[in-house]
Length: 363
Image (cartoon, rainbow, N blue to C red):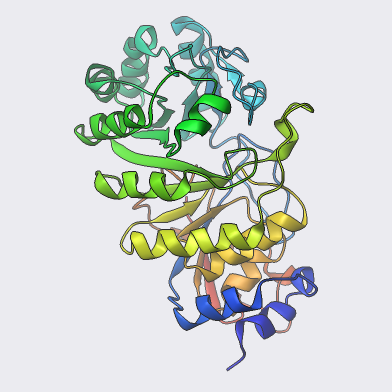
């Protein structure tokens, strides 16, 4: 049987990728071949030779504040909001949701800029969310909640939100310096606890390298997640290109990111671990994605070139879904041939398989 590094070298797009050999060996010793689902939500442009249909209209992102955010966190500065559909009034939310549904949307990612207390003010929009769910019962709504109390968590539950997502920060210094926020680590844990007391699917996020590209509170954040009910954990990696020139972010060390993937898998052996959309581009993304496959992550959004083939070569069952990774929990594959098979392992590709592993698509 080929070693994992040998398998990696056979993937044309990854043939010269440099990885930490000791880390890869540790991952290989603890190998846990399983299903990996690759997600291609349509709120971000995505092109791959391995996945033909990215479901461009299936999962739009809406912001209830447009591109406005009072916090202006150092890692984002509201740039993430700029690519979302603006829906700044309840009436606009109803209109945009209906337009997107008519265009083929199966769900939406609901977000918005925060106030000075890191709260997204969803209150006025809750009746409209309920109206959307009543009109389209199968339509999924995932909301980035930011900080909230039990009352607001209950209102989102009553409004029909399906999935609640919340960044968990484990370092007070990061909360103050990066988020520009006068709140404590305990506030993030209390918000997670409040969501856990509802019937919502709870999917906390940890931003790796949030402290200007360096590790600081990630381990503490992982401990917080482990203490409370959650349905999955999404890991994302800080991206340096949104930062201001006077407070730049470094690109987080890929091997250190990989080691955190392993720490998360060991701490939460039964939890679906998902690599979300946000992470640095280029070579770093390939390295991070390769470590995610090797660490036994359950899902990867917008995989780098060659990563689908790598997963197949390492013995994972591969599936593809056009939805946000936070929402696809429990969905079952429904049809074959989501991947552009002829471009992956041509001599072995036939009948919707990559290197002998069936490739499915989640409808």
